[in-house]
Structure formats: structure tokens, C-alpha cells
Image (cartoon, rainbow, N blue to C red; front, side, top):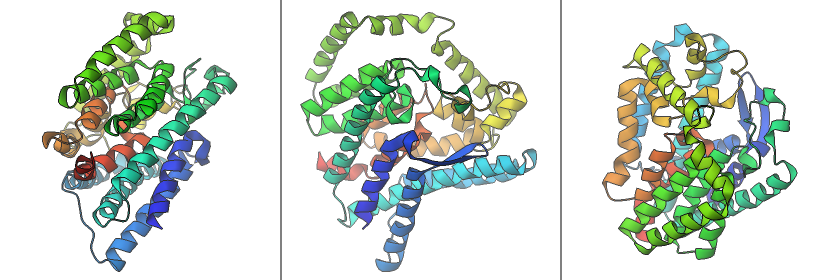
Length: 379
């Protein structure tokens, strides 16, 4: 049963914004949140009661310490926020804990042979294909997100593959993660499909993420990949004028790159306000408002909930201590020579979007970082 619940989790995550069940008080409840909570609950019941053992992957200990420290940080800042703000912030804290536990459950499933690494890889690859196809459909029926009600908080992306995530940057980041799996399985057609999807997002952060993946993979496993990537990039640049426009637009003050720098500076300013414990995990939106970084018109925007950099977001909300434990957990597989592509590419990608806490990507990297030794032996 656990294996099929896992499949349901990945499927529901692939549905993205189409799986929303309810929106209330600044947060949304999705089918994938419920699916993963059910999976984590029954997984714990099965391993603790039926098998009477529940192994903890070594690098998850750092994240558990991080979670405990975050709880202390939130308690210390409790008096600064009202009950509705606490409700929203604690909902996302619980989500983080549930995803963390779910990834540990997958680790135990692998350890006991209830699922194979091949099945996990295939499931995520299928989700990548689904998101690619859904994105092509979206380009036909909803090419311009500017027609949506601004109160929904979505950026007005136009003619960019945003798929079920309604955001080309997160879509490109997720497809980039799937390319790592396609590379490890040497699936040329799968890799081609995913790369086309990433190109169609016209997301510079996703292009950079893919570049990091190909360079790291090429440097450690197959140097020919780097040569092929350079040739492909050269051809794409001159064949698709919009790619030239996107790259040259980096220096434009009105471009999104300029606003990311502002977002980074805001995060550092907020961190300086409480450098040790932070301002409280997932209270970032409310603190931004207090600092004057968010206007009433911006408050409902999805980007307002965190910094454009995941690590700066963690620094601002959980302080330097929280960031240290988070980094120890995140980079420990890399330091052991495992999951170099996932860790390095996400570290770069998360500088530009808050990808480490985006549900589909968070579920992905927690599973593969906790179960790194299984994928290492599988490949």
C-alpha cells in the first residue's frame, strides 16, 4: 500500500495548482499536501508498529535539529504576531515536517525492499513528462497569464511554459531535476524532451541550473556531455531570438534580475534585525510588511512569502544557527561524493527562486538526498 501512496504523492504534486482544495487566510490546502501527510502517517505507523523499527538517514539529523531550532525561534517571536498569522506560519512549518518525515519513510521503504530506486526514478520521470505535456497544453489554452485576476497573485508570464505550477521558473527547475534522472539512466529521448521543456520556460535560472547539471555530470562522469551541451546552447541561442532577448535583458533595470537583487538586500536587512534566531520561520511576509518592503497591493503576491533566495530566506527567518544546520544537512551528501548534480544545481537555482521550499522540488530533493546511497549503488 505504501508504494501506491507514494505514486499518488508524486502524481498529486504533478497536478500543481490544479490540485488546490481550499484557500483561506493566506494559505492554500492542496491535494498533494493531504496525500503526503497520509503517506507519512501510514508510513510511520507501518514501520514503528508493524516492523518496530524506523531508520533515520544520517543527514536527516541536521534537518531535525534545524526543525527543532525553528520551533524555538517561532516561540521566541510569538508575541509579535496575531493568531491568524501564527496559523499561516505554523501550517507551512507543519508542511515542512510532514515532507521531512515522508522522505524518511521512503528511505525506510528502500531499506526494506518495499520499493526500488528504479521505481522511484521512473515515477519522477513520468511526472516530468506529464508536466511537459501539460505545459504544451497550457501554451495553447493559456499562453498569457496576464488575463488572470491580479488578486490571484500570479506573475503575468506570456508565452512561457508554466504548466500546472503556473510559474515557468519552478517548472523549469523541476524539469531540470528530472534531467538528472534521465542522465543517470542514459535515456536520450527523455533528456531531449525535458531539455526542450526547459528551453520553452524561457527561465534564465532554469537554463543556468541545467548548465550546472551538465557541467557537473560531464566533469565527473562523461566529458562528451559538456561538448554536446556547448554545441546545443550555441545552436539554440542563434536559432531562437527570444533566448537572445532574455539573456541580454539581464542588465535592464526593469528586468526581474534587478528585482531579485532588491529581494536579496531586503532579506539581509531583515536578518540583521534578529541575526541569531531569525524573525520566525514563515513569518517573512509579515516582517516584510513591517519593514515597508511590501505594499498592500503586493501582500497577496506569491513571491511575498519569502526571499528569492532560499538560503537567505532561511537566514532571515531562522538566523545564522538555523542556516548552519540546514546547510550541513543539504550539503552532506555532496561532501560524501553523492548527489553532486542535485545539490550543486539546486544550490545555484535556489539563489534566484525559493525552490528549496517549493513542494514538488522539496519532496524530490529530500527523498534523493536522504536515499543517496541507494541511487549511488543503483547507477
